Image (cartoon, rainbow, N blue to C red; front, side, top):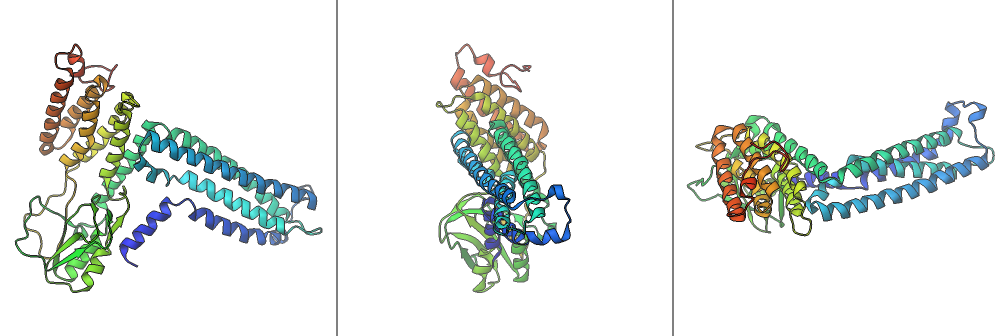
Amino acid sequence: MTWSTRFRLRQRLKSSLWAWPLVAGILGALLGDLGRQLDQVFDLPAYWTYSPETAISVLSAIVGSMIALTGFALTVSVLGVQMATGTFSARYMRILYRDPSQKWLLTVLVGTTTFAFALLRRIETQDVPNVGITVAGALVLVSLISFLIFLDRFLHRLRPVAVAAHVARAGRRAFERGLAAVPAEERPDILPPGYDPGEKPARLVRSTRAGAIQAIDGPGLVRFAKAHRCRLMLRHSIGDFVPEAAVLVEVYGEDPGETCERSVGGMIALGVERTIDQDPAFAIRIMVDVAIRALSPAVNDPTTAVQVLNHLGETLRFVGSTPAPVAPREPATAGVLVPIQRWEQFLSLSVTEIRQFGGSSVQVARRLRSVLEELRESVVPERRGAVDAELARLDATVAAHFGGAIDLDLASATDRQGIGGPVS
């Protein structure tokens, strides 16, 4: 099994709602069949025993209530999907599916159902699994508490600001992992802009399917290149969509042989959509989608865009104040070169569309100016030029929308709250 196959399997398990409930259902049925043996280990007092009729009634009620609660939980989840897709961004759904509280709730509900049903099958006139029934009752309590936690978390996650904060944290974790995930000697080098290898590639590795590049096995590629004394140059960055048969990797130096395509191709995971795991720019994409949807004429909610800008600004501050790895002047004869998103691309992705669609909003223009001015003070010096360029674009946008208008002075001010905060 290749690295890319294992990566896709992990992604499916993280996004699936059935894997852990299936395991819990099987485990609950097995433990329920062993429930009678618990009475031989634990000696319950007389007041904690059940008659066969009472046991049947209790377990039947548990099975029915757990099935009903499972259906209600799934209904709430479906409503959440509809609201998140229509209000925020369809890209956010990949994160919503991974909510641990939802998976835990379904796991407990299904496990309790099969456990109680297995106990129900074992009840006889003179043989009642008293300990098992007590455990089933405790599981009902756990299920109810889990449902309340899930419902509370679900309701709070429906707020756009909570979505922006959650996505921003995911993007920051991805950025941090990219910096410290592997030792320096196993880390690919950055492909310099306009780099010309000065020779023809010894071999081309092409994609066997169409899809977005979700992740790469950087250490594996480096080890392969060093073992075969060759240079691997990736033609696309993580997040790019590549068609079938497109060139993924150019191999320079010694030809590794026919197995190169399967080995190298198996270290590049392709999928139907991007993921945040190694792609922090995708987190920014989701936040921008939420903001520009709020700025659409159908919604007209600039305050939501300002709330998203708060978390976008913090994400950009973290990225912009972190020194970027330096591209080698002369790439090693055996190594890996990968293209990455640069500061200018992160910044443009974060502000261009919000400026374009929110340029006519005084609130958005003021908050966007505040974000950019704060970035100019916090990013490393060599990145301030890109921030100044975006401020110039903002000035031009404000002038185009408010030139000659009475609100030009308001739209040109800096306000951390958009409207209502101290103006500087």
